[in-house]
Length: 570
Ligand SMILES: [Cu+2]
Image 1 (cartoon, rainbow, N blue to C red):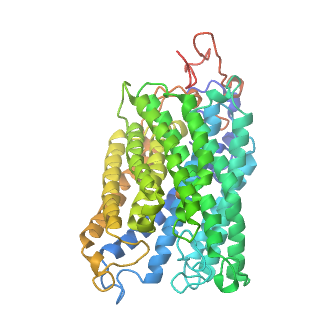
Image 2: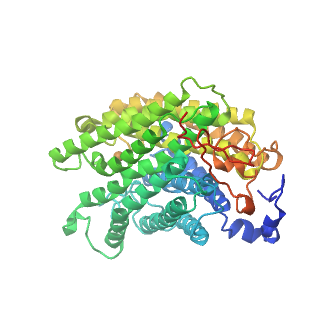
Image 3: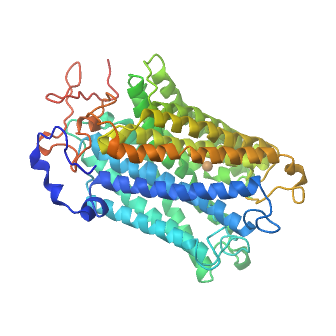
């Protein structure tokens, strides 16, 4: 990224940022690509912490031995702190920054053909608040009493007082960190939506906008519309923790189920906030690597909007056994089954896109195909959980854990890797290594299934989540499945080891990768008409992209890349 317009620089007038210092170029930059990269790197760093936490508590589950006398690898309270912060980090500090903030920042201006976000300084502020939130979260692990251990859903009364949940300053800092993180993404969402509405290349209509940009925007709207109740809830929980109110505490006349409503009104749409950008990335990649247009662009768009609307009326499927009126349970069971229809429709459109295409199994395409296959398992198992009667048994058991890892992992991890291998050439101007990429791909996807398929069976056997050991002494009926826990843990270790080829590939390719042409994948979206790496401002200022529409074809005169919108009709 450091050389500006290194190759094919027909427009030297655009070199105004050459004299910038390291600080203004990489730390305090307002360039959307740099901010997106900052979000991505911070998200990856937090991902390492979250992954390490998973390693520690999976070691505890597999080998509840003697390192801590009487317990195993960690104490029960530390186990709770690890699972709590693993979940929190992976959702709020990995999936959100990488899928929404990094992809939104990097892709929106490039793919709609403009030079930057409409509010670049607001964008920079958004990242800075996000960075601050990450620091606050990390500090919360080290305060007296330790990090918060009341689970990522922070249900009261445990989150306001509880002997195994570290509810002193650890809980309060956790809450402050989450609130700051939410502020960062609110600022980002305003920018994404405004930019997409107002800064599209001349000639680009709403239906010419690439589907991934639509999906990122719909995700931003879902986030901004669902997070309000959570902010209100966070303020109330903060007051319960710190100044003695009892909004959620039955001991003072409060109602803990109120928190569950406020949390899941946000928490369920959040699944789609993370899922939709990844689903969009997959649409871009499968069209390019099968040389096909997206099957049913408008249908996919409308079903995405339908998914977004429906995602607001399913939240209480997390509360079937929390004491809500059973008739309301029926309503939420029906809406939950309904939402599987548009999601399935999108995946059918993708399969129809692949059908009959000339498919090229390049690394980004492998990740995209893996997304479709793995998410299918997550989606289908969700239908079981949506049935309120089955949920009596499955609630908070390992079937749920396996299910939501089959939705979040494809979205956050597989979706991220697909995007990373695909757009790396545009950001860096070099290609990533295909062989290392394939090693990384198989070494990630195979062990991923090794971790979570056993958890479906453990769940069906009745293993409840958030318990730090299952031995003869505390769960005699579950102790016999210890081999499965060991298998899952070893799979996790293999998967973590196979992330090393990725980091080698990433850092080597920045300096030594093969030089990338403007459009290495022969794609037809606008970002590939910008130089590789795309300079500050993306496109030469006197040659900004335009979208032309002729009677029979779409063309961009005087550009080597023809752009035709994905919804082109023959
Ligand atoms: Cu849900």
